[in-house]
Length: 153
Length: 299
Image (cartoon, rainbow over all chains, first blue to last red; front, side, top):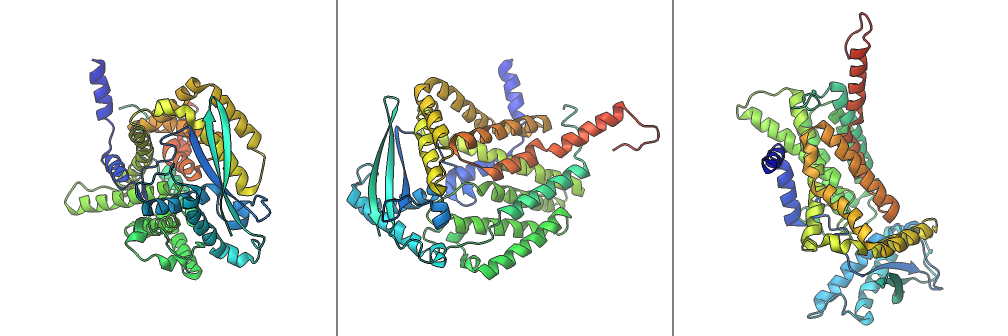
């Protein structure tokens, strides 16, 4: 009886466009405007982000200096790292050494320096530019942090 | 059928919906696309040359044309031309932004709703041409609103299904690890502007979560269930409003805890699900029915 009521309830939901959009999003994954919305779809004990400093190791505010948010900076860096991985047979994200990630970081920095925003704003990055990777790991309910200098221009 | 679902959509309510949605569409279109090219083509940029949009002068013309189209949209004039233009320009701008090597997820919902509205409009045109019972303009607009709600529901359903697919159903077990993500997003937020305001509270929340994994799993799973049950919002106005308010609460919580804001999602939820103008009109109508003034017209 309860099952029948639940089925009747579900049958009342109209939704051919809903089903179509859902199916297309899941099939195409990431082709704008379709997306499978993978944000926080799985979690590990460890994650990382990247940030920028000048040549004197003073952090730079990415939005106000470069017009790019820190999450976007990470996505750009991650896609460059994936390109590096494609060049190395049987490489995994975890197995990539610092040297293997460095070209990806250098390309990101070069792209930032060539961006219209930086070019228009003049010499704001004359003191050098460094890209750091900060890894955060949860171990025994405590957060461990480790930073690595990935690239420098 | 409940008395709420039987309530017809009023002209004022639909006008408010169109006006508010037009405002959101106008807001979401970028005033500048400061890119040099398409390092990682995505979406429409894979099949069309969208480099024209990188020209600031042309982008400005497209924006003014969009504003003109939005006025026509609100006035319900020329939807067969206006809706495809609005959709095309929205999808094009989103594709340019997402072709820079970093996929962002804050614009999709608007383009999806525009796509759904365009589909609903031409479905109505097709039905009329194939001899189906003639619909009036209000009936056709009702389909636009319903398909917009379906597009919003689909976005949340997809998000929930992806979580289950990526974790093979074990998202509940993994969700306490969200604490690590909160440390990350809090520090990312700091490096955006070197503003330390949220650093201490973010660290405190993450620390608390790391020490209460079971409670975190229960709370996080309620969010997953909310997303998974998104089709329920299509059952009627009451469901849509309650579900919409729950989603607003969900987004506000995520925004405060993780510094992740989905403003356009919230705008569309307020417009198409919570639908405040309808409830105000309904309250006025009930008030009028209970306390009628002699000789006054019904709203």
